[in-house]
Length: 564
Image 1 (cartoon, rainbow, N blue to C red):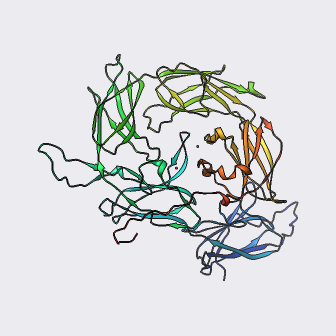
Image 2: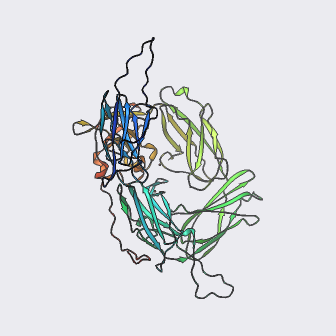
Image 3: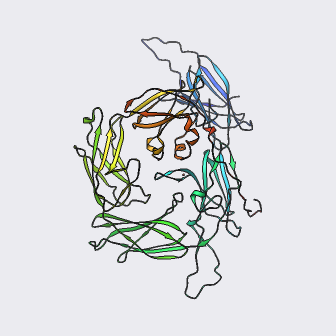
């Protein structure tokens, strides 16, 4: 007995033409079974049958108690088949990897195919226990799974899943995607209860904090172990032993410009400089002294960013500080006025004269919340613009609109390339921001083969080595069933072309991802417009030389057992 079938959008229509009623083609059918890795049938898995069209249509069925599914009255055509079930990785016909392009089912009229078998892998997980330096469980602390990647164009870790420890100190990341992860405990968000042996009269007791710790026990991101998580793999015993250290405090004041009698909306944010921690606290600073303070901080390096409104204009100031295990007083942050950032937008290429207007906007690139209208200016007919009162800081640039079929060719602040590097504004900035748009981007097409046969896959266009950190330069394209691909809207320049059996966009955020495949790439220099066709040999991402987890000494748990 097959399961109940729900059909959505796939239908057989008999249309009248000049009064005639043509005979419909004989319908066919598709059926199969869904099993787990141990060949046990999976009940209530969702099976989706999709047409292969520009706008696919879907039919949905659920597996019965025997794991079986069936689609009846299916017209002849080309289809794809996918399976989903909570707690399992998705299954896709034609590939063992759900991230690879799906296979194509060519169904002839009147044909019933019942030989489709799916083996679903369980979801991957990372788990462990967090203990204090006495071996007691630490509940209610945050554990993070971080992905290697570029943040502000620097190598580090990017945010990933987060979990909280339970009262027994245990945590678990369920259903994480296969890939590479570092695991860290962010213990700085809660204080540590510690009995002080002796406290002098009138003195406040010493406070303690855990700080940030990476597996297998380092407070530095560059010493973190990178775990390789395979599909369906469970990685247990990623355990932590936190060490409580004396908490530090920081106190200071904001220095207003000499000409300012007062300020409003005065605030200061403190950012932990470890890129993976995402520790960002804010505090208000009130007149007349505009003093601020932060308590219970772990030792480390921080950035202080102050912001205020002075006579309707936004002022900003930054200060880098290093805090040891003691109180740091007397920190001063001087507010600096914004500058008027002038510039020009130039359009190059065919029909460039038809492009006019648009705007240039700035977005804060330091990760600190922005409490005012974003700096923005319209582009005049002659291409000029002026953004008034840009406060000091790191800024990302957005230009709209980009010409249809074109690309952002260059951005320079004076002699500095701010398309591929950060744009930093300070009170002495006088250079113009020069932006060049092109109306015609590069296009490249070709074919992917495995041996002498066409192969399905994912094609990656990666910039030359010195620009690998610029994620906006990457382009992706999936091949069709004949192995053909086409990439459009690419900036002109030097690249490498790769063809993989499967690939997800976040993979290129890992600075090490492409290193094992460098010899498999084809070097190309793309010019604006149509470029020469390319033939690529498909490689498997499974052949990458990935760092393996080293065995670490295990800490005994309560039961005694052993990141664009």
